[in-house]
Image 1 (cartoon, helix red, strand yellow):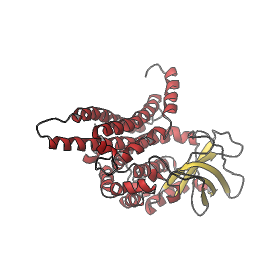
Image 2 (cartoon, one colour):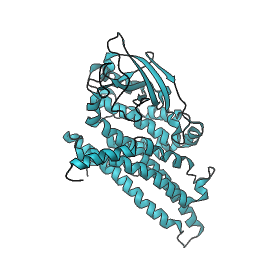
Image 3 (cartoon, helix red, strand yellow):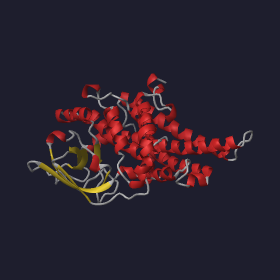
Image 4 (tube, one colour):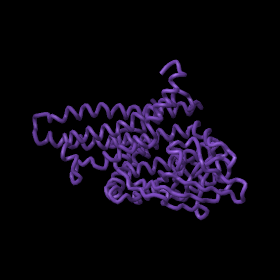
Length: 394
C-alpha cells in the first residue's frame, strides 16, 4: 500500500487526504446546512458550488502547469464521497464537473483545449455536459444530432434530454455525429460556451430525489469553434479512461450516501443505548449487519480506485476484466445506497420516517434511488453477461 492510498479515501469523518478534508469541511459547514432547502425547493446548491470554486476543488484534477493540483482520481473520488455524506446533489455537481476536467487533462491535447483548461482553473469555470439526447434514452454511444461542419461557423442543434445544472454552468460539453453524413456511432465531443450558446428549457426538474442537480431538458443551439473540439473520436475517449472515470466518480456519490444513512442509524442506536445503560438495544444487531454491508461497499470503491490507479500507470485501463469490474461497481454501489437507506429506516423507525427528526432519512432515501436509474443497472449487467460468454474466467 503506497502513501498515496494511505492519504485518501478514508471514512469521511476521518478524512485524511487533502481534498477529502476540504470536501468534508465544505459539506459540514456549507453543503449540509443548505441541503434540505436545496432539496425542498429543487434549487441549485449555489453556496456549496461557490465554496468548491473557492477551495480549488473544481480544478484539482488539472495539471499544475494549467493551474490545477494534478490530483489523482482516487483523491477526487474521496472528496466526492465525503461531500455526498452531506449533500448528494452537491456531490454530483462536483462529480460531473470533474469528469469533464479529467477529459480535458487526458484528451485535451490541442492548443485550444489546453488554453481552455487553463481558463477553467484561473476563472473557476463550472462545466456541465449535455450528452443525453431525446430519442436515444441513456445510450450515449450513438447520436441523432450532427455537427454542421460545412457551414462557417460550424453549428449544432440538439434536443438534450437532461443537462444537469445547465443553467448555472459556464461551459457545456456535448456530443454529436461528426457530420450530417456520419453514422450514429461516429461521434465527437466539443465545448459550447456563451454567447455563442443558447439553451431553451424544454422540461422542468420536479424529481423524487437529487433535486438540486436541476437536470432539465434543453434545446441547445450553438456556434462551435474548431479549437474546442476534441481531436479524437468519442469512442476512443470513453474507452481510454472516460467511461472508467465516470463509473468511479459517480459511484463515489452512492457510497457517500450509504454512509450518511448508516450514520443516522448509528446515532439513533447510540442514543437508545444511552437511555438504557447496561443493555444492548435490539436495533444494535441490525446496525452491526448494516455495518458489514457498508464496509463491503467502501472496500469495493477503494480497491477499484486503486486498480484504476495501477492500470492507468501501465496504460491498461481498457483491460476487459477491469471494464467488467467497473460495471459491477456501479450495480453494487447504487443498490447498496438504496439497501442501506432502507435498512437504516427500519432501525430508526418513526424517527427516521419523520421529516422533523434529527434522524430523518427522507432526503437520503429519495436521493439513493437516483443511483439505480443514472445509468441502467440492467444495461451494465447485460454488457457483463455478453463479455462473460467470451471470457474464460470471471
